[in-house]
Image (cartoon, rainbow, N blue to C red; front, side):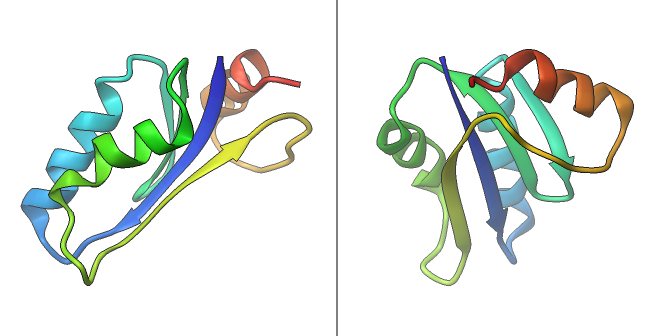
Length: 89
């Protein structure tokens, strides 16, 4: 499985809600910021981008970035454990 950082910034509340729900639909995810998640999936990065970007406007910012170990950060213990358990080497 691959892990991707999904980060977005949308001025439209409905788009933010829709993107969050679409991200959570992947099933294996951790929220690491107000509009940033890491997901674990068998999908390719382009598939994730195409699936999640469908409700965005041209003015929105949106990125899907591959991530793997090692990683370092500071945050809630549950997120740190999720990263330890799910990020590939």
